[in-house]
Image 1: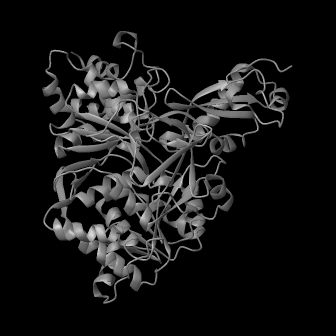
Image 2 (image 1 turned 120 degrees about the horizontal axis):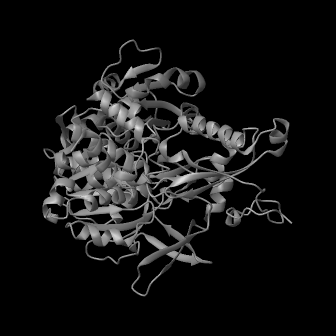
Image 3 (image 1 turned 90 degrees about the horizontal axis):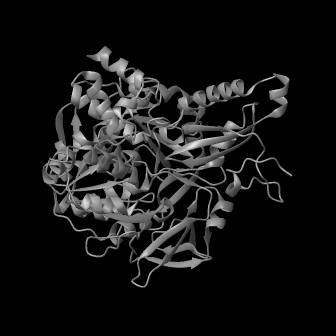
Length: 76
Length: 514
């Protein structure tokens, strides 16, 4: 599985939107239905899955799927 | 019995038992009950030696062993602790430091950038102790807690035991009038709530504390109750790492708000169905978790059934800061799904037009310097909760509505819509605004100011863009729970009642007024 697909599968755990329906402009809260805590838990899963260490104050500014994917690529 | 007596007894009985565990990077750090008590006593004696007897002392920071030792140092002496939400914007914290008449402050090193603003705008603030041993390049009036504790260690005098009716702590809670209120809880309020909640646990039982420490539920039920049992309180360093920390600390018991249960369930439900539930439970919950106490907001009973499949009993309770905080709770022995449990033995309950009223030894003394709000909420010793409910034939309490206009989010945060509306109304393009709670977030419903729309010849798209930009700016400085995640632009003004107040029950109707 490529990184983007793995990423979208994690997103899909918290959302009713399927990986196939997702696009980079979708916002976590408004479009994907994440609660604030879903988002925190999701970030924690990203850390564990991709072996990253995220800067909490920075990642909480992320609003869209595309922004999160860009960050993931930057940190890899 | 006071918290001081409870703590002294625990220190005697559980001297070597670990009281607190936390992570320093990846290393697990520990503090025994004996060591904790030493720091509590030196803090208390230090406060006395520095002349703070009878004063209010604020604390700003997330959960840490230094925060807790300082808090206990304050409340076991003749001083009053004022825990404040570290996620609030700097100007809100200044307002609360001033309104609570705080003479000193314990501050997390992470919030050092706020220090100058606090010292410059809080004239009553005499000293600030950073929640770290030593401070480099400390400005005037600023010290490390090491200095305070050393002053306590070299002092011979210890503070006398506070009186049962002395104010132990002031906890700020959202007010329906748009201004947060300082709930005054006495020494007896806190101790009687700790004693009235019947939970049994072996010394060393691991409790992972994941809620914000300035909230009464976390402060009293995780920490003070946990200490009374000889439990080991493990600190969750970030909500990002809650699941990871469950596998590190392997908690037996946890306190959660419904939103946490909902989030964890999403992870359980999304797992490969071929994985046995016991294996998944070990992966997600750490392998030992068997009880989650929940409160602060309504929990759909569906989750109680689902979590039971993973061997975790979810027990719902009910409370509010004004009641120190627990009023009723389900226990492993006595529970009924969908109810908020039986009232505690120290809580008397009656109903007035469906509203739940509470009387008893855990009910607050009042709101700090707010006599009108106190008189409105406390009548003849009966606390008006603002919640509607009923009791069934078996004595279990149920909630079925709200009287007061407060939005309760599933993370347990109470949000006063007026407080936010007052801020949003400052924008000239906002004619009328009402904030509602929807889909676990806040939505601003705005009727644009027509004079501004006409003067600037704004079309619908321009209005949308300008208001969204304004909300984005507002959100930037707010804690997550106070951010506006939805915007609805109305075509018509809100419907008003005969006294010209907006009818909140009709805010979803957007039709031309007659």
